[in-house]
Image (cartoon, rainbow, N blue to C red):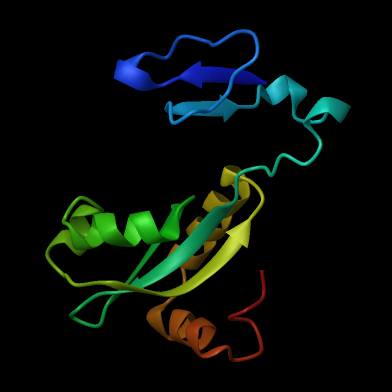
Length: 132
């Protein structure tokens, strides 16, 4: 695992024993070590496919690894161009995926659906709307 010192904009690796003591330190696993015994217990990132309901009633589909931050970004006008003119927006649906690739595949699938099928997904209706 690599530990980086983020104080004063530095991204220099920190070596030796590190005591947090209020310094802005962040530990980042190296991808090659994720499956080693030393890194057991590290939670891999989770990606979400989400649906937003815009102020005009339309739906927007996207992918993120931080739902709350992404909703704030959309509402601040820093999200997608589509949502910037349709604020405020709120997350009305999300589903977790283990990888960005899996989330993007699901996003692509949902984006191709008609509005009626997306609404059925939101309503939790059984059938093809919820099928992957």
